[in-house]
Image 1 (cartoon, helix red, strand yellow):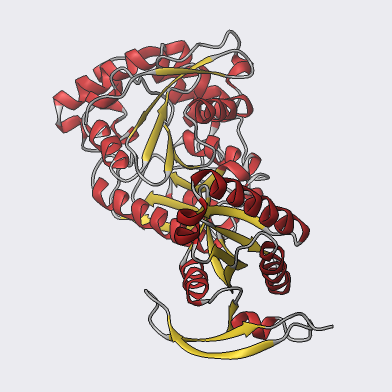
Image 2: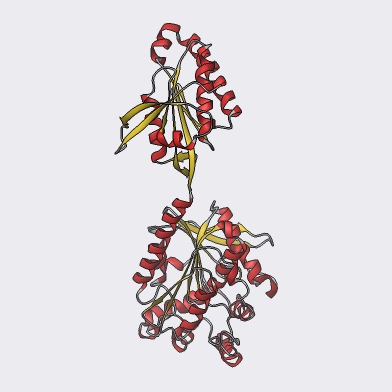
Length: 453
């Protein structure tokens, strides 16, 4: 998988945010990196590059350099690094990448950013995944597992003195994995990566900004399905912080993983990927159910159209079908039907009520007789799936098969339609049981009679 092209999105406050898209999976996945990143060399990084490629194997992955790091603009003031403005990095990148709705994967303080985005833009967040994340950077009365002021000051001093050096990654090996120091090649790679990702001042600015972040009031507002993953032995961010998040985000799933690595791409990353893929797959199945609605399907078709076209000639037949189409569309509008598609000489439409669908079919049958043609119609009510550009599902197939069995000027309806229109004044005659092509069981059909007086 080759490295994707680097592009830029512009935020509302005028900053340019570097981003890339890779993969063509069924779900958009935005990966918000923790603290530092650089898209120019992210793919060649040990462990991290392979992890991102694996994500792109089952999703359309969108990665970005957050403001102040990597290839993105450096804000002129510390205030421009505020988490609230950082949300616009994600929004601008999603807009530029053509992503209306995405799952968000936030690592470390990237998790805080994703939490705030999910709470603020629920319509654009399909799912939220947090790894080694936290609600507060420092220790608080109800979340005492954060860093003390003394620990934070010592950490900032180390950034000031050792940023970009191999010593920084050796003395602070728990940032990624306690075993990082055993691999000199990886240590050198991360030292270089940190130099390319941020200057010492930029790294400190981001750290100090995050020190003031408190997401506790936001967590209850997160509506997206949420997966919280954390390694139980992580010495850098305690597991209790993950539990705190999961307990306060409605319906969140907490997964404690074996190991002491801080980063998702270190240690047993295969388990992380498997949990993530399983979670996103479950969300897609659930959302498919949400996209199912009850609708009444109506299919109409001109009877003997091929023979009539031969007798009439192309020009006359074209004029006749145009008059037929105009008549059908007028009646669809009168009975509040929605035209979904036209196929050949027929119409496929939906209605929000079965009685209106049957009455519309009856009106069409009567109206086109004056044109010297006859139509047949089929009506069925069932759950349909809303898909891009229309609707689908077994109910659509059943409606089409019912219509195909009707004779000239005949309207056939499924038993569901008959049952749901009880008391409407519509009359039905038993048309017997029939096999519908492509549908397993036999269906009892009914013939709609002339409207009651």
